[in-house]
Length: 111
Length: 113
Image (cartoon, rainbow over all chains, first blue to last red):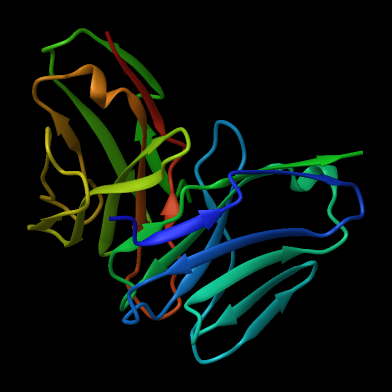
């Protein structure tokens, strides 16, 4: 049983475009929703995170939108750049204990 | 500050062999985790620890064992390697406090043939 479902599996976006990755969860006890970015040969690194008491969080070109009633959250990358090409994982955690990850989205930003 | 250090980076095992994947962190984090990453499957939690002497199973613990004798080290043991254990293994640590992220190592790529 997958705790966090992520889509799409892969995404191709033109430079300057908007990249959107979606995640859904079932466990309403989750209270922390981070996004991780992973480059080839490296471990994932935290990109941005949100708590369920806010509907949106923005850091630079990266925005998380959170819909508590729908149990969905998404990552928007504005003005996508070739350097953003990486694999992105959403995750969910309860009480910052165990973290459950989505299946990942491989983003390719074409110049 | 080295962060989370994993060794080795690569390893090839024959079926039935055993090995230990090493993980060390120098951030004095209480929480440590082992994940495996398979293509299209994301990261699956194998085992985790909330402090020295305390470990618990994650989503996919079968075929693995862990121990946590110190805050710094969290080794993962494979006793009888099987082809299904071919994967990339990531160790991570966290303070376990509010809004604290996971800090990952750079992984160990294991092939079992």
